[in-house]
Length: 444
Ligand SMILES: *Cc1c(COP(=O)(O)O)cnc(C)c1O
Image (cartoon, rainbow, N blue to C red; front, side):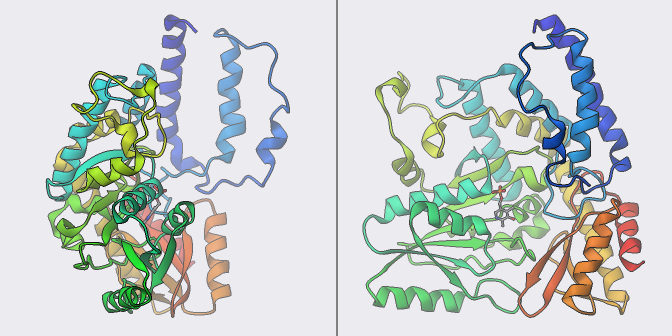
């Protein structure tokens, strides 16, 4: 494809995206595809002859509408309330496009000086935006799951030998268990208090019990904003031989607003911290921000340098390959730069506050309707509620709402509450009328 062919097709694709944004409300939020629908429609073998840049692209773009769109669950639709959001935004999409256009791979400073240094500065900006102390140094990981895994590996490197034990609450994200499985670490789940946050007394008791047995407690993952209900674990003062990792994948974004920084009170004691701009901070997937105060342990755990990766600048510059699992890395700082410059701190705060206000309103409607009940305290923009009645009735309600195509909610099971509906407000396009429509649908 020549640059001029790319230019013409690129304009059509950008137009397609803008059209998609304009008509997003016309699609069912949750895809109605059945398993195998797309597989059945795609040729079993690749074409021998390519279409080239001529009229053949008409067919490709038609197939995008005909085959792909029906199989899309529309995360950017204003009626998407199912999971924590996965914000896309104009500036982030343009950053992604330019990143692809540059086509670099920034594993080393030398293979991407601008990518490396822009990332360093963006993580400094982001740390300031959310109120993280300057002792934290950061990089972009693909996902919070990777952030948790690298934190655990750094902690293990620092801890050294022994019968190592890690801790997280019963409400921690499944990625903590997955990280422990990958690292071959025994993870113990700490009971939660009635508000579903980790019980610090129970944590202390488990640590003491393990020490008494000759085991080596080395890692605690505190969740600031659990996935099921946005419970906030306290950031406990820990003995210095324990690594405290803070998983604020979702809730960390809200810390751009000073009124929500109480959630990370004590973060200066943490060894590492993670929040996902790709959730609720307008930065298209993937972009997980990870910081540590102990870079030496992180790079100690992850740095392996064969001859072909040695460069003249080693030691004077950051080679982010040493901070992550893969070698190669995308130029993800570009979209973050665009997002922060486009919206500014003010715009980001307004984005968060708008959704929190909408969630408050939804919560008040639930409270006023005797047929429903709230199931957990609302912290940010997630409302956990259920219809008074059986789990099966709630399950049926959720299925009917989702089948309508007009809204998409998800569920969880909360201790003592049973089957619980999750209304997670966070798509950039969501306005009050969409929240109201979802509520009317639920009541009907
Ligand atoms: C969403 C979420 C994760 C997982 O995020 P990925 O970036 O998809 O790995 C981890 N922890 C919490 C608390 C989350 O809400």
